[in-house]
Image 1 (cartoon, rainbow, N blue to C red):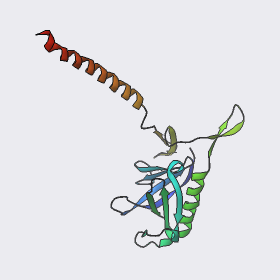
Image 2: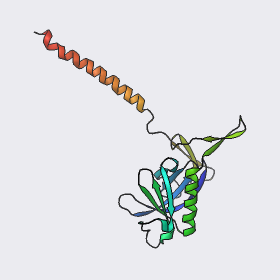
Image 3: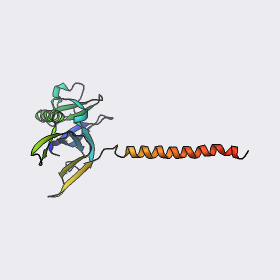
Image 4: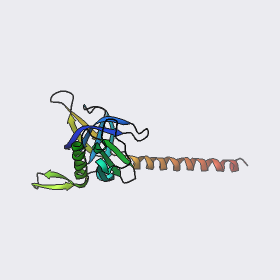
Length: 185
């Protein structure tokens, strides 16, 4: 996956509404990742923009949001999601907030293309946030960190089938115990 934009952004927490400074990576598949530092070792949050984002606003368009101390209102970026929630961000300058807004909107809309060497053509690839591999720079020179994200519902069907089978076996065993008093009469 290709990295479209990265940098430091202030992010407002959902519960306490405090502002935290995070390193942010925006990937071509629409994933916006928040890290504690620019080393990208501790992922704090990942948001999929292609599936959940409906609008991005910046600057004075962000009504009702107060920026962190010593930052003007023009530096704000607010992402609106389908379920009605928002993600409040604040850049270090007005130009940077506008650049983030334009990149976020472009990422949300544009499809991802993959090169097929057998057909010598590019084809649109439907991307989801899972089954994705990210390759980021590692700690030392020449090293890379590989992050593989899997679908959290992998294996659910097998678990449900095993649970149904165990339930049927337990039910059959309980039925046999219900007939036991008739055998002793």
